[in-house]
Each structure stands twice: as C-alpha cells, then as structure tokens.
Length: 403
Image (cartoon, helix red, strand yellow):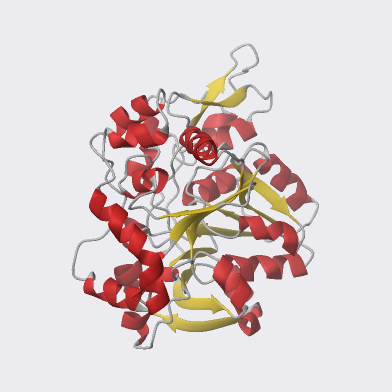
C-alpha cells in the first residue's frame, strides 16, 4: 500500500486514490490544507494498485519524439485580453470542442474553491481560462476521463506537470484520443490557504467573491495583477507587491512541500504540449512587444504538432529555438523554487490568523510597495508604466513563470 514517509514524495495528484479497486483511499487535508492520501485499512486488500499508480514511485524517463519551440498568440482580441498570456490554452481547447471532444481544466465551484471541471461548450471553457495559483482538487476526475476515453471521446486534460504525470500513470497507457497540456509551474499553494484568503477578502469587502483572476491584464501583460470581483459590484486589484496571497506565492512562502523538489521538471515531458509565459518576446524575436501577451509553447509529440497545425488559422505563430525560450522565459522549466526559510512558521500562523496578519509576521508589506502599487493606474494611463518597467530591468525582480 502507498505510504507517505516524507511530504516531499507526494504531489497530491490523486492517482493512488483513483486506482484503488475498493475505494479505500481518500484525499484528506493536512494542517496546511494540502491533500494527501489516507487509507481505510478495513477496506484495503493490499493489492498494490496504489503504489503502481504513483508517478513519483514509478518515475519514468521521458524522451520526447522531438520537442519544438514556438511563440504563439490567439487572434481573438477579447480572448487574448482575458487570457493570462497569449491564449494558447483556449486556442487548443476550442479545437477539441469543435471535434466534439471534452476539455478538463481548473475552474471554480460555488464556494470559489479551485477544482478540475469538465467543459463541453465554449461558454463552460471561459472559467478555465487564466492561471489559478492554487492546487486544484481533482476529485474523481481520473476515473471519469478513463471511462470517456474508453468510449472513444477525444479528451484534452490541462493541469500541472504532476497532475498530467499522475493521470498517465493511472491510465498506464496514453490513448491516442487523449491530448495532455501541462504548463511551467512555479509551485502550488494550498486550497486551505486560498480558503483563508477568500474569507479574509469577503470580510474586508462585506460581499461574496464572484470572480477571481490571478494575473489580469488591467495594466498590461507585463504588469499583471490579481483582480477580484464581488457580488456588491466592487472590484479589487492587487499585485504580488501588496496582495497577501500573491506575495506569499511569489516569495515562495506558500507552495506544497513537494514543489521544492519537483521530479517533473525539465524540457522533456510526458505531455503533448507545454505552455508558459513569453515575457521576452522582443529580445527573442527582435520585434516590438505590444504588452498584450504571448505564450511560449513546447510541442513534444506528433499528436501535439498535428493539433498546432490544425489551429494555425486562429493564432499568430513563429517557431523559436527551445533553448532560447528556456533561457529567456523559462527559469522554472528545469528548476524548482527554493522555499522561504519561514514557510512552516507562516502556515502555522495561517491556521489561527487571517492571511494578511500571518504574512505580516513573516514578510510585511512595506510602504514603498504600497506607493508603487497606487501609482500603477496613473503610469498605465500615461504610458509611463512601460518606461518604469524598462528602468527596473536591471534590478532583481520576482517573475511568475506560469501559464
């Protein structure tokens, strides 16, 4: 049976729970709010299915057919604005839906918890668009996908590298009708911490949250910001400088323990396509960057290449050297982020305090950052925000490398 001796060895992918023939494994939250498998020994028959399904215990060496690099951007301006970077996920997902397929990706439930959802229409696809810096709850999705694949349905599954590896390990074999899209991941904060933040914000604004965007293009792609919409009509904006949840994320205070030693890093991946940011478009291409966003992508398989070819009429696309994309945009392609030295202390505090108070004891938000944040609207309207960004280029800054 599966035994988690160290939390570094469990990514929470649910492959073990999904594979159990007796439903003896439940995913339960620990004190930090991350999900881990718990075995009901009264049901367990010690068949070993859970161990065989674990992508960490059974880490496979991945040799891609031929990884190719591209920079792409969806042509639909509305979708581009709503997307975190260049709209690559939507372009791929739209195509799958047009083939009467099904798309699985991260969305929100009625309580603003991040869960893996199923989309059969473009309207349902909308909430999957954009990064969610929370570990999504997969529930029984792997079993649902397996059933639909056996029925011959074309499936696109989008998730973190460990979730994709978990699905493929659970399935044992990658079916031809499954397209896997992962993204370059910095790490995943806990669902419990996100719940803490949601309660904190709803109390602060005296209203329920009805929408959240972690990297909205209010001030352009290069100065993206958290955007939260409330039922009372109010809207909140806050970047990693001043937003407690985002600051904890970019400062590596909130990621899952296994993210610090991620075994799914690298250019070679089991997915068909990998998506990540393209912040250095001008440097790579020599062309002007209009600050509306581009996506870097890796195509690992022939299947991924065929899908990319099929969507070319809907995207701007140019092939680029894989190593250039990694060097300029993909610091997290091969590297795990080093956790904050007071990470454990932060989570202990977050058990008893709202997230802002917990963070203030570890890494306070300073006046300078509050002033910079207040100036963004003026700088954006006057066009000076681009000048300020270029002046800051020579300094060490935190950059979120995600879809």
